[in-house]
Length: 312
Image 1 (cartoon, rainbow, N blue to C red):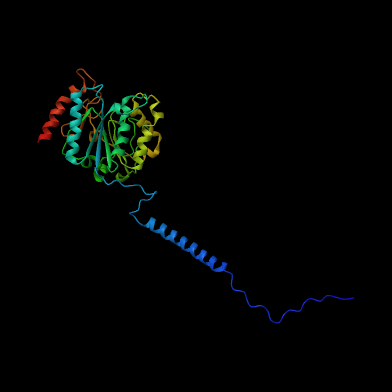
Image 2: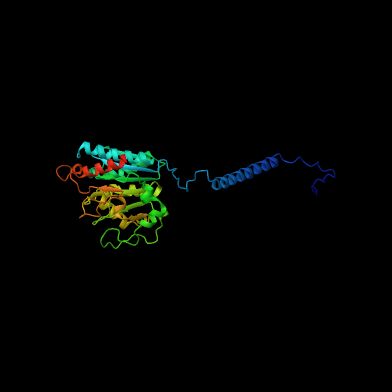
């Protein structure tokens, strides 16, 4: 019986084969990957450490040109054009004196979707922030008011940090006389984005200062929300303002309440603080469209005072 034996191994093994060409390729690939990762890490570190690069988590700070935009909505369909011309003149001359911008627009420029035309003031303020993206503040002042102290800037009157700190009414009912919601007691002037005052019945929506910030835009868009316009508040946007500052702590947390004479005393003493000579602003609150109690009639004496102060 014959058996098959395995072949004998050669004592002369074949030479080593050359190294596979894949290894250098893999090495080059790894080096390239590591290089890309290091580049990305360095780029991210530079991006977040360089203050000149805009970041998505850093709010854009307006340059302050102009510092303030004065916004007023006029209604030529309801009020005398001669009177409205004096309002426009008042805003423009005051703005020019202090390097501000006057933004006087017509109520019918905005669609309030069936709500009263007074809601257009909110749209006008939001429009102003878009038109003047580098302003620091918008000051809305109703068409039934004059700026009387033309020599005093808004910064001197209310916006300067020390000045505002001295004016702020803290831990006080937001809506008089006995609202259980009160202004924040620990709020600092540099945290304020909304400045407003009160009369005897509530917040004065006819003279309001809003900072140009992401919060300011949020506030205006909340205030003019179509839902609030559909509520049919008795005093329209004024009652809506009172509602949101009492029910939304995010808004109350940025609100500074100041004395009424700071931003807009009235000619009628039964409705709030009365105007006195030397006050910054006068408001003909409650004036009518025509007749003896018309805004035009009430404004005559104040127009003469303002004109004489302007010429001095």
